[in-house]
Amino acid sequence: MFPLVYEINTRVWLKDISARLGHPVTLEAVPDEELQILLDGKFTHVWLMGVWRPSRFSAAIAASHQGRPELLDHLKDLQPEDIVSSPYSIPAYEVSETIGGHEALVAFRQRLAGMGVKLMLDFVPNHMALDNRWLPEHPEFFVTVSKHEQCHDPSSCFEYTRGKYLAHGKDPYFPPWSDTLQINYANPATHEMMIHNLSHISDLCDGVRCDVAMLILKDVFNTTWENLAGKMTEEFWPKAIQAIRKKHPEFLFLAESYWNREWELQQMGFDFTYDKPFYDYLGASPVNVAKLKGHLLADWNYQEKLCRFIENHDEVRASERFGPNHAVAALVMLTSPGMNLLHQGQLFGLKKKIPVQLIRHSKEPSHKALLHLYLQLFEFHRETVFQEGHTEWLELNTNGQSLCFGYCRTIPGVHAFILANFSATGIDTRVNHPALAGLEDSELTAFSTRFPERPHERQLAASSLSIRLAPHEGVLLIAKTS
Image 1 (tube, one colour):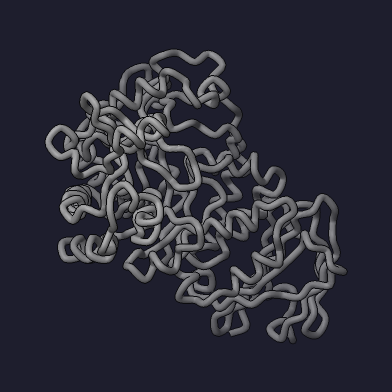
Image 2 (image 1 turned 45 degrees about the vertical axis):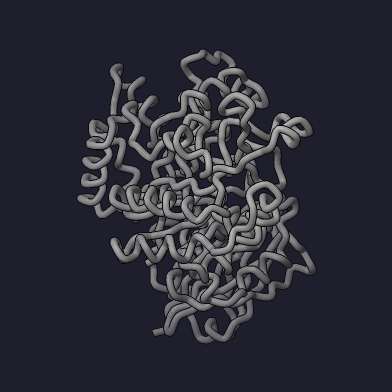
């Protein structure tokens, strides 16, 4: 079955529980009721973000607010103790004592296993914290910047000792991350050091989410860093993944991937890769139906290794990005093949994105009706037709209305029709499909994203079905013909 993953910002989560209980809580002491959502949603994996030892340098940089106006935007009553280091500026892959340390993580993993849930953690291959454990003895693990280059671009690097500079970690399309150092993959010894780190992590969990995994593809690294570091001559991912699979054959690898590098990373051994195109096409204003169609009809071998999401810690909250289309977007996501990633707070319709440098979140109302809708969608998601079904695009009689579309997932004897209306007006639609021939209305299982309301009345005639979609409504119709 495709994994259903729940992302938790560990530090914020524990802080919130501690505030409600009136005393500090670490991982091993999380009350049972706090884990109920995992059971209700039948999640297969939990991704805990922010478990590694925090960086003092990163916390100090965050506290300066330099380039971080979102901290004050999120918490109007921001206090110094609310600001923490970035979970992606890691000094060492040691479990933070603030969440209970190594033993607490081990105990929590065992507890999850008893619930039938697997644990995923972060691996950050591109960069490390300024105060990382390897720098004093091994500056060669990082990209060096000459004093001449530093004069031209002072913000690009860090003076780690008098007159010597190392480059900050960087995505070539954005400014450098000033609380990190760029790891040098032109140095073969660096590969071994990072595989050692990954091996250590693999003993603590069942899978990893690999941060910005495409940045250390050989051609990307060389384009960005060859002038300073020399040439990276061997890909990192194939040998790293192979090394871990020798120890843990079932270990899961998820790549955070952009720039259409998903297929390449899948070929290198990743089980799943982020599907940012799906997010962009679905979340476009208006929804990009033409691109979405082409994407959902791609080869199955590619589709089955994509990780679909409409929210994660890097993106705008789904209820903010999709607005009234949140529910119908969730329907499309959960009826498409591949892994599904859900973010903490998404099920309750929270709108305020939490900066990763904060340990406390602003209070906002939750929407329990949305939670019940998600739980119903999760039940459908588990059905075989959505795990194995072939995808077929439906031609609707919407007079070129670009905000309404549909597709069908099919296995022998079962057809699931998904109809989505992303517009602010109701639309009369008609579906023609051979599987509808001879069916009675009572043979259709019908679900609406206006749950618990039922879909509008529909009419079946020969192989045609007519139904009115309400504004911002998604409808799922399942026909079992044998």
